[in-house]
Amino acid sequence: MISTGKSFLTSLMATLMILAPAFSPAAMAQTPKGQSEQHVVSSADLQKDVATAAAARQANEAKVEAFLSTPRARQELRKVGMNYQVVQRAVPQLSQEELASLAARADKAQREFAAGALTNQQLTYIIIALATAVVVILIVKA
Image 1 (cartoon, one colour):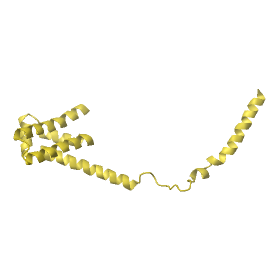
Image 2 (image 1 turned 180 degrees about the vertical axis):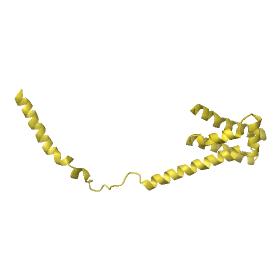
Image 3 (image 1 turned 120 degrees about the vertical axis):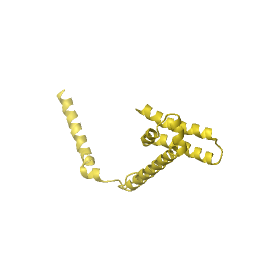
């Protein structure tokens, strides 16, 4: 039994002595040939992506707020008992995806109304639906 333990320790020590140079700090600091010290994504690229996302979010917020802040939209919101200020404060709390979706709908409704493709009644329904969506999304999040 003692010889088995002794041979195990001898084998373990021999293995450690063989592998020790591979795990030394000098060996760990070396990079293989052809590999650079760069990260997969540079910090400049990350900053650019963050700036792009922030600009897109800001543009989407502006589209939704511009659509809902028109005199027509405010009038329609008052008719159905919705407070514009509540909706306005809720818009920045939407997720990027929710905001992008509502901005696309608002943009489409404005274009179609300007082109005469929507009636006043249809535009009213769209205004109410968008404002309701903003409020419902926030209620669900809470």
